[in-house]
Each structure stands twice: as C-alpha cells, then as structure tokens.
Length: 322
Length: 196
Ligand SMILES: Cc1cc2nc3c(=O)[nH]c(=O)nc-3n(C[C@H](O)[C@H](O)[C@H](O)COP(=O)(O)OP(=O)(O)OC[C@H]3O[C@@H](n4cnc5c(N)ncnc54)[C@H](O)[C@@H]3O)c2cc1C
Ligand code: FES
Ligand code: FES
Image (cartoon, rainbow over all chains, first blue to last red; front, side, top):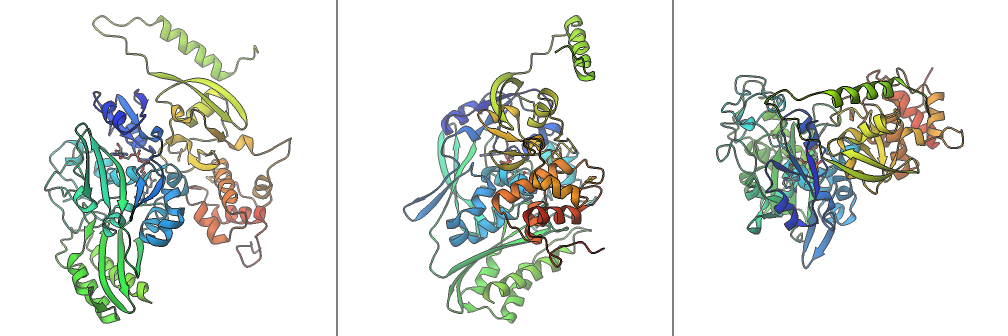
C-alpha cells in the first residue's frame, strides 16, 4: 500500500481539525477504504482514524430519540435488542451486509458513506466518480446500474443501512470546520445531477458523526428485504426498507425506500400515499407494486430490475401484514 | 539464534541494497514511511513492535511474527483466508491496519491447539475431510471458532450463515459445515450428515 500516516482522533473536533491536513481522508472500520487505497482509487497521505473517539460506538436513549454513534459496528447494531425490537428494519439491514467479518469491522457511518461499487469506478475507469466526465455504464455493462434517478452517472447507492435510515426518518449529525449541523437522512444523499462526483452533501472536510431515530409510533412494524444475485456476501440487486404504522388491519402511514435501484436511497412517496389509511389486501399490494416502478428508466441490461422491484414491493407488503 | 532462513537472508540483502543506494541527481530520497510502536497480544503472548502505519495486520502476523497460518488470498476483504479473532470476534486481518491493534488481543490459527492437543474443531476438520488444498482452512477454522463462541450449538443453517465470509475454491463447503456441526455436537443424520 502507498505510505501514509495514521492519526488517531481524540474527539470529533480533533477529527475535523486533522482532516484539514493536506490529502487527509477519514476512516472508520476500513473495510471499504483500505481496499480503495490498495487499488489506487484513494491515495491519502493521512488517515484520520475515528475508532479512537471514545463513546462514538454507543447507542443511547435521549428523551424520545435514540442516538447511535457512527462508529458502532454493524454487528453490534444488528444485535442490539432495542434496535431489533423497535427499529427492526435497521437491524435487518445491518445484518444483511456482506459477511460476519465485515460486520464486525464495518461501522454504521462507513456503511452510509461507502463509495459506489460500480465496476467501472472500482476498476479505475476515468468516470465521474474518478474525476472524469463520462459514465461508462450507459453503453457498457449496466446490469447492476440505476433504473431511477440516473444521469449523468448511473451508479446505485450501495449502502444497506441507508434505505432503512431514510425509511425511519433518521436525522444525521454532521461535523465540519464551522461546527455541527443536523439534517434529515433524505437530505444527506444527493443525486448525480446535483454532484456527479459524490453521493452525498458532505464537504471534503466534514464527517458523519451520529444518527438519531425518532420514537416509533404505536403499532409500527418494519422490515428490510434484500434481493441478491447469490445467497450471501454481496450488495443488493434490489432491496426494500418498509416501515408501516398499523392500526389493527389499517395502514395509517407507510414509509418505503428502495436500495439498489438509484444513485440515492429511493423513496416511494406515491406508494406511501396509496397505502395510507387503507387495509393492505393482495389487490392493494399489487397496485403498490405497479406504482413503485412507475417512471422507471432502465438501461439495456437491467430491465429485469423493473419486475423484480414491482414484485419485491408487493410481496414484502403482503408478508408484513400476513 | 544463528539460523538463517530464506526470509532473513532476503531481508538482509534487501537492507544492504537500500543502504547502499544513492539517490539520483535531482531526485529526493522518498520520505520514510510513518511508523508507530504498538503493543499487542497474539495467542496470549504480548509483543511490542514498531510497525509502518500502512502495514496490515496479516502482514505483521506473517512477515514479522512468523505466524504464516493466516493466508493472504485476495487482500481485499473478499475471501476470508486471513480471518483471525480480534478480541474474540472474527475479522479480515488483511483489512485491518496493524497500528489500529494497539492494546488489542488477537487469536490466530496457531493459537487453536493447546498443550500439544488440537482444538475439537481441528479434530473435526480432519475427521470430516474439511480441507482439500487447505489454503482456506485456517480462515474457515477461525470463522468456525468465532461462530461457536457466540452460538455453541448451531444448526446447519446457522453454520452456513456464520461462515459466509470464507470462500473455498475447492468448494468443500458441505464438509466444512459438517465438521463444525460435528465439533459442536449438533451433527445428526438429517442435519447435514454425509451420506455415503
Ligand atoms: C466483499 C465486500 C462486500 C460488501 N458487501 C456489502 C453489502 O452487502 N452491503 C453494504 O451495505 N456494504 C457492503 N460492503 C461495503 C462496506 O465495506 C461495508 O458496508 C462497511 O460498513 C463500511 O464501513 P467501514 O466502517 O469499514 O468503512 P470505511 O472503509 O472506514 O469507510 C468507507 C468510506 O466512507 C468514508 N467514511 C467512513 N466513515 C466516515 C464518516 N464518519 N464520515 C464521512 N465519511 C466516512 C471513508 O472515507 C470511505 O470513503 C462490502 C464490502 C466488501 C469488501
Ligand atoms: S486475504 Fe483477507 S479476505 Fe482475502
Ligand atoms: S480447501 Fe482449497 S480452497 Fe478451500
């Protein structure tokens, strides 16, 4: 690997200060970043290690909210009884990531901020993500690329926890040189038409510190369903994060967010409106599935994602009320 | 010790070449790679080491502590051949920097046997023909060890899930699952037992 200095952050402020050194990048578990350094996708002179910030790997209830430090590992997160019970979709999403070894090392913040796994980007093609001005997937091998929200880059957002966090209406705490700001999870992610080089609104010298989850309403149930091209170990081809607030048989409110289909976690507000105040019958679930793929814009080799998405939405809804 | 291994021989000549090299005119000698001292416990033995910040844990284990049981397959967190236990949990040692290990405890495949006796998992791997070429075996053993730490009586399904992070290019997955179930005492004819 290229030589660099590892510097251990004492606290969030210290991390942000250290990140201002020339060519510094931030690292959590390193499960993604070290591979990118080895592959010359990132060539840092300084690695700012966040794992040494005390207390940033904890889950704590603060008033009605749950605060989750960004340095919590995916394994610890997915086994936490409060998360499993009240925020099942997040526990299931964390548990669906990769392999036990990656979940033992990978952090929640790193999972949300991981770079795309498009094979052109990862193989050093001069695409938007590598500082170029072209997306090679448009005329190339695009079977795993976006069917929604693409252009000029057609990557899909790779994080499993991101759709779950948007579905739960989480808030993200971000720290930078001028202090801290809090934004809704949905506002953290940015489409390529906003910035084709990046996937979110983080500035170069900003870090994701923690996320907070609102109290869940009575009758809330949630789940994460992930479709893979093999049985384990890999990113979603399509995934669905669903949070339903139920009153007996009636769905009072729904939040549904897809992974694997767009450059950001893809929220289905139209589907949510169809479900609100209704009993989820097989007919309604089918209608929801149809609405989920309205406006889909597949490329030459990823048309299969359209029926896959339609059926995933329909099936997941029916399983949730079965 | 005066024993010269192939490795120390090459390391020795390497140092000589570097010391004797003269930077070309107009070129600067590259800045030395940043280093730090760490204290780690490996298989119960405490070590104090000076490491380059860029060295991975598996490089330190293999090249500096002589523990070559952990293998480097992909060096990218994809194959599992480098799996070790970090404070009891399985991690890819190719995807951890050695400098991050300061104060931590690591267990490698070399630490499985005690007092000349193999770990029950190792016995079961032999009994059930787990290893074929054997390259992935140490990683499979460490994943199995981590799994049994957490769940001492897993089902076949749980073993498969627990070992998804270890690829076997000889594709001997069924035997590995069988071995782990046997070591855990949960192997029965209908739960993955081998049929002749
Ligand atoms: C074989 C393999 C399979 C994988 N499968 C999946 C999968 O199925 N699903 C999935 O979601 N992911 C998957 N991943 C991706 C990823 O490694 C993990 O999801 C992991 O959670 C990343 O977390 P980390 O802490 O190790 O990140 P790091 O490697 O430390 O960082 C990842 C990126 O985020 C940046 N970053 C880290 N922390 C912060 C922060 N606090 N603020 C701002 N930026 C930050 C880093 O600079 C880097 O660019 C896979 C990776 C591999 C190698
Ligand atoms: S060598 Fe570490 S996972 Fe392959
Ligand atoms: S035994 Fe050969 S790779 Fe697994």
